[in-house]
Length: 562
Image (tube, rainbow, N blue to C red; front, side, top):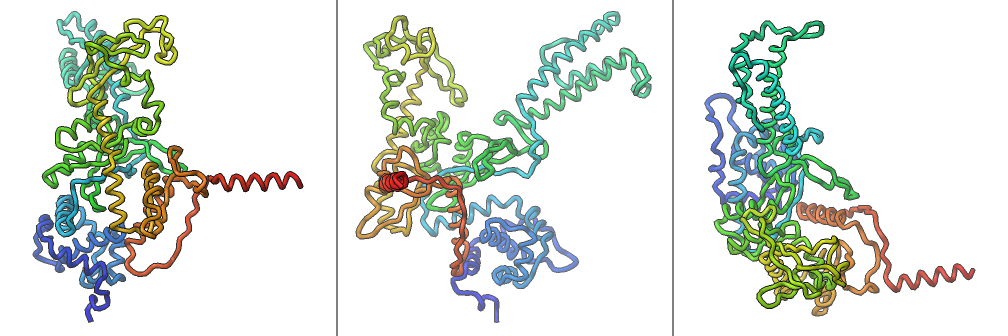
């Protein structure tokens, strides 16, 4: 009997093999060396299928584990036709043969899936995560610290040049003194100095008990400063324009804040920022960045999406970590709708007092002649325009100042200094924020959510957003005679669900979310029936409903009476 006879017809490995058979895999195997003598090599197509299936089924699999699976697991034995390559063979195959084709393999598999499943690529849901690099966490190099050290070295070089010029005043040679120096210039100065004094490095004295000559000291200082300056230039070059740090043991890794323990405490560690774009529950695009902030990762991710599919998604959806001036302008230039929250989105949409605050500059009325006036009726006049910090498109903001704040009855509420109030106005950004609010709060979102639940009819609904919870509780909780269990991963103060119907354990949301996703992934990867339950303990905070609070009060009172 063949191995496939022992496998169920719906076994994942058979489905995987049929799907991969529809893709031309030979074109990814370009770097295989010619074989003339020795043992026959393993089939590269089979090895490619085995590697892809191993990582698909396990999420991550070591090379030694991959070797063991080929010896004992029927699925891997089927893919390798009873052959079991060593872990070294798999390592060579991945590093030497597949290294340059990974992106192409990912894209081609995706395109095949998207054609079959009719995936909607216009709606892209974006999020990122930081992964610690395999590098020494104490091997940091900071760009700003390096630049400060370089400028301190410039001062030392200037002092040394002054001493040398005073020494060489009788020879007619003079070194140029500048505010900054290049390593090449210092090397040239050292060569000229050696020529003037006929310096022979072989005759230099070293160690205690030997007195160095002035020429030897100056020459050694020139060589030392040139080497040190060259080191600083190299470090700044490795950092580049967009990074502030890197690791000495992994130059591609940037030091970032990462939540590493179950209490949410973050640490500064060398890491990569991995961005993922999801379309219809499929990973459409993945990008690995060196940026600490998600804001800086949005444009590279969108450009990679365009390179892969030939167009930009119409609706890129992301959290407040992506909402920036640069990203909004980029979306407008490439025909994308603005669905990324900005930093103050929650306060702007839920805090009515903050939104309607008359002392906010955006709420100041515009009078005749386009003059902005404060609640006291004083006029604000344009002082100057300046470039917006960090904006890559040359945008400017306007700075206005009140004509006179003296004797204003609203001074304590309006300003914090004794001077006339100064405000910065960016009308373009304000309009963008309003557009984002309109897009995210439009009834279309809730209509689509309602329609999706009606079509899918899920067994349970898991959510995190407060307003989404309100909608689910009021409109979806009981529908068409069916009750939908609703699970909220975090409890927020702005949630309007009545507290008297909500009680129990408020769990640490980031732990609960992590465990939920991990459990779901585990279940999806298991093809056979799995009835084993797992228990995970999470530090809780008890949240009692109004009913439970009343009952607890009764118990306390009865105890006091006794």
